[in-house]
Amino acid sequence: MDKSLKEKGLDFSMRIGELVRYLRENGQGFPLCDRLLVCGVNTGMFIRRGNPKEAAELVEEADYIIEVAVVAGYLTQRQDIHIRADCESLLKTLNEKLGGQTK
Image (cartoon, rainbow, N blue to C red; front, side, top):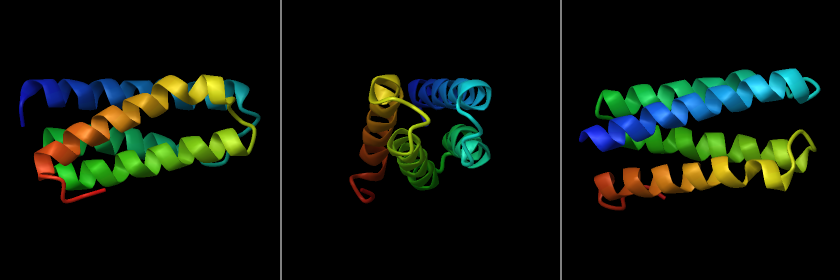
C-alpha cells in the first residue's frame, strides 16, 4: 500500500479515537463506544497490513455506528458531518484499491 493510504488509515484511527473520547465524556454513555474504537483502530491496522477489503468493511461499520449515535441523540448531525465525510473518502480510496469490488 502506498504511504498516503497508510497515513489516511492512521488519521482515521486517531479521529475515531477522539470521537470515542468525546462520546465517553459527553455522550451520556453511548453503548457502542467500544465497538467504534475497535473499528477505528483495526481499520488502520488492516490498511497497514495491506488488507483493504477488511479495512473497508470496518469503515462501513464505523460509519453506521456514527449514524446510530446521531439517530439515538448522542451526536448531532452537525457533529458527524466531518467524520462521516472522512468515512466516505477513505471508503472511496479503499474501493479504488479493490477495483470497486466492495460497496
